[in-house]
Length: 68
Picture (cartoon, rainbow, N blue to C red):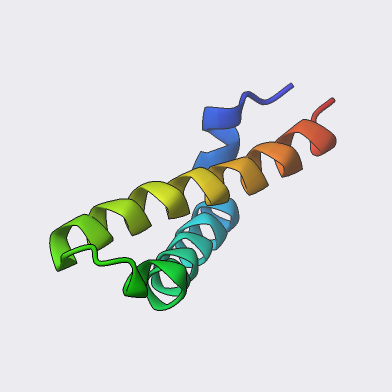
């Protein structure tokens, strides 16, 4: 059984994770947060944190179902 860290090191998984993270980050910036009054720095921090969390949840679920 492969642990989650090893799973993320698979080149295809790593690339897919990075691609999804970047798309999520941009999407979050463009959606709801842009009108909340955050300055650019706090908008960047919030989008990074939220995109890491959502991407990690997605790939954690893939790992969990693939390596039960």
